[in-house]
Image 1 (cartoon, rainbow, N blue to C red):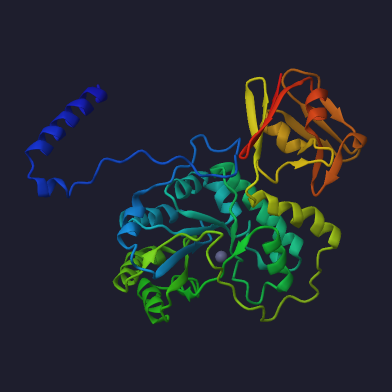
Image 2: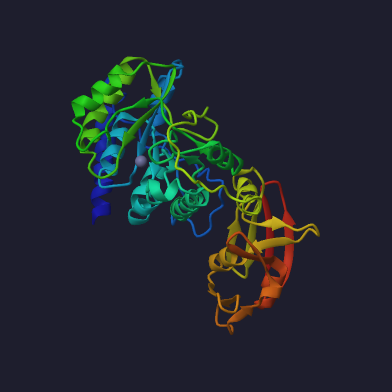
Length: 403
Ligand SMILES: [Zn+2]
């Protein structure tokens, strides 16, 4: 019934359009065009039910200001929260893009908001899992663990790994040279800010004060602006339309941060936590070095078993010296629908898949790297009762078909 009504409504609208004077017709919003295909490079598999699509609406605004070389990057930290959708509504209305540095623990609670941020074409950055300074800045491996944990949460929701990182509280007094170096070597882009809106100076900073902080800050051609969309930042939401108007009146356009944007980073300094332990060379070689490949432009590996297909992004699999594909067992098998458990006492992995007997993998069959166990794809498939029938490779995708 609704469909019939809809058709009638459309017909009426079409008639109305024909009778409208031309100049008025142009003021009506155009029909939404088909969204361009997802540009996610992750090749996520268990990824989103709907592929992330880029909202093209705010680009119109951008195009209108193309001649302007002055750019503001609005960034929102500590979300998502209940306020994030209000921020998104404002950005949508004003047709501008922004960057959200999200907390893993919040993202986990509101995946639908994360999905909306991505779908509407904004950038998502990583702001660690729990924001606790005493955990994050005592030992790099703790910071790292939270970055990876949050990255995995976002990847599961959007299909993309956030490559942008913002340190809770900023890097000053928190990062030493090594934090900067290791994150860079691992493929991440760390961003501090040029303009602090002061919205987190204390609880409930009023909108007028936030706006005045913004207006008092010196203007530069490119500026990263710090705002917050975490719980309790209602005043930031109130100030946002005026913040946007202010920068527009000064001839700025708005863009989202990308890993290619020139980073804004504070100098190392302040009172860094004492007795910080640097990670060992072995740790760096198993964690940092392989991580960079996740963001490299190398082909993904598609593995099909019967009609089930999954993908490992570049960096999620390796090629051995002998040319064999080597894969992380848990990621591979779980994406194919298996359940993998680890027996720490026996150092064995157990895979339950389809209606086969559970498959036990013993230590001599796999190699441990980082926190994962790895083995050749062919061996893994054969042990679980599948034979490789076809292998093909192109610039963008390598493909293995098993039956
Ligand atoms: Zn924060």
